[in-house]
Length: 309
Image (cartoon, rainbow, N blue to C red; front, side, top):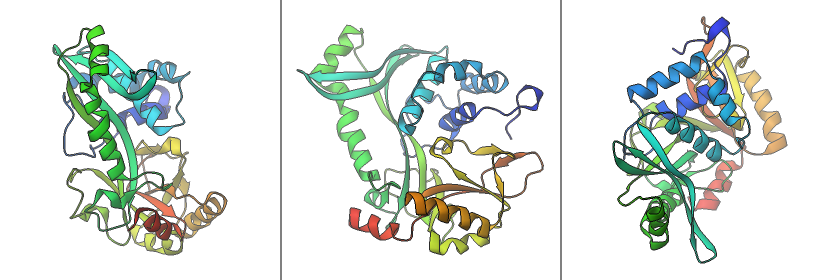
């Protein structure tokens, strides 16, 4: 269970977000090289930030954090740059072919005298099919799908490190051999009914230990009654990372209370909303028991039409 910082104050959300970015399960079966997630230095670094978060808060003060992908990259770069075993070589390295940009290398760093390249991604997808095909996992705004992202990473972003234009840039940085990996985090949401812990089929690229959630349409929200929750939190996008919250951040209520709030938000925005459900907490820290999307009633049909499911 997370500890509190001095004087009983909250651990600021960026510290909680960074902890999730590092410790949450990987989406892909392939573990990025090097595996720095469970490194003792990483654990010690997070503990120090919990006690004194000023370094991270100062780092983020003038950075773009509204876009989740950009925020995710900032947190990764902050983490890597504060490990003594790591030396950052480059980040967001743009590659040009003449005057045309052909791509960007997310991060290159040195660890134990070897050079590594990570392509970074954080994604939240809802399964609208049988769960075995990457194309059946789509983003809540219907602008993205898992198969599209995987193709982009493995057919373009990672091979980009080998093209002559990139090699010329790397030579200027005194870099020769590079080990490339995809570093992808996120959550896959399965339709209710059916607990996400009993997932039996996933796309071949996806880890069986990936973080999972559920999704349900507004008209079927009563299916959540079986969850037996006493508190909930409708998450703004800035709250999608962390897995624990404090008592003054959550709302006391049952399915009826959640339905009322969700209906108002969906009426005004017509975009799926992410929610965390909780049971009562004696400690004042609410660990997420269930993370889910509540979608507009027509969302499944729109998603199926958009991605031919």
